[in-house]
Length: 298
Image (cartoon, rainbow, N blue to C red; front, top):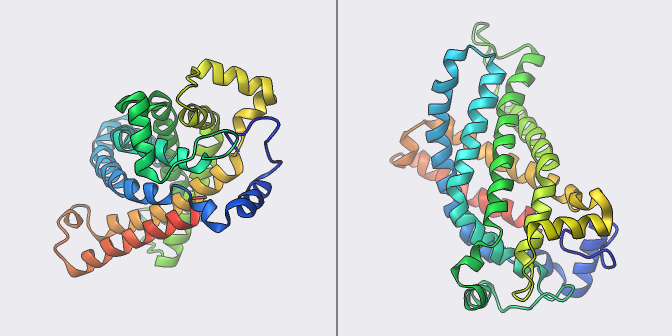
């Protein structure tokens, strides 16, 4: 939806899905899946490692200011999320470029490829290594704020939800059930996805257009912005908002449930995977990651 022209843009996401199923069948919804699943795991490991390291330092930094608990959580999580995103972009951007090209191949004049390695070969041959980092600046501008907003919204919304429920304060001795904790975490993930998608979709639309342009077309970000406005006005920047919201909310929620459980087991010992239960969780985490990619890739 984000790369379609005014004349070819389907009216809604269901029209897009029907069109893909009609021309390519169910496999068409999973173009670029192999590339995504291969690159996403190391990128996510880098992200979560940087996140945990930065979050501890960020909490110590904001503690002297005596902010309210939701505000402290928002600031510390936001700083940690942005820092972690910056660290993972070196891996994520090439994966994003390759998967985006696979997703739009053969559509509206875009080139066709024989898999992810073929994309890499052709991009490197035409543009060198820098071709794999096309849109890197916009990716940083998109995903770093998006990650900051997501984690800030998640951290603060969790605490606000517990406060609204009148439960979970440090002094009342309340011990919520595992089911209650999961529901609050899931609600926080959905709220975070909604907030982040609304704020960052315009930048993501521009970035996606830059990344999938052919080798003979090298528009600047300014030219992409002008073309979007000329075609659809300011609403053009929000193409694909619905799918992006669903993806960020659903995938983010599944990821955060695994992340929170990992944090609950131990803040440090999981790094060494010395206990059978932690090994089992590590396996479950990768299975959950794989399944969430299958469900939310399209």
